[in-house]
Amino acid sequence: MQTSSVPKYQFRIRTRNGALVDNLTIYGRDEAEARRKLCQMYKDCEVLDCQWLQPSVLGRGGHLNYEDVVDLIVAT
Image (cartoon, rainbow, N blue to C red; front, side):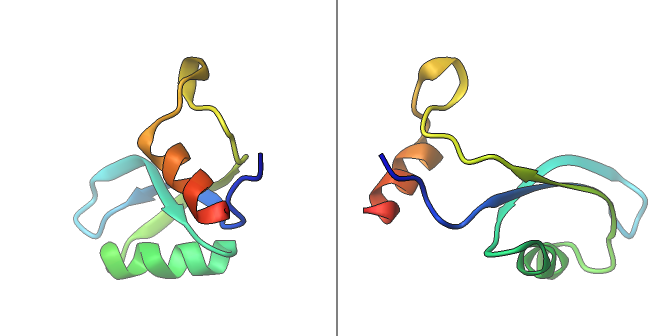
């Protein structure tokens, strides 16, 4: 099976009021696009960490979740 060609990026940020937000997952063709989308949602945030997430056909525990199903539909 083919997975989606658009990767996910996981961010850890500090919002403009100082709150820490972990595990923000955003799709983007590249890290720059994902950061742009992030900054549209969280204006004036500080990006503390960014990780590229490996594409996966199966979700946690071998079960498909909603995002995995959508990825499979879009890839075909």
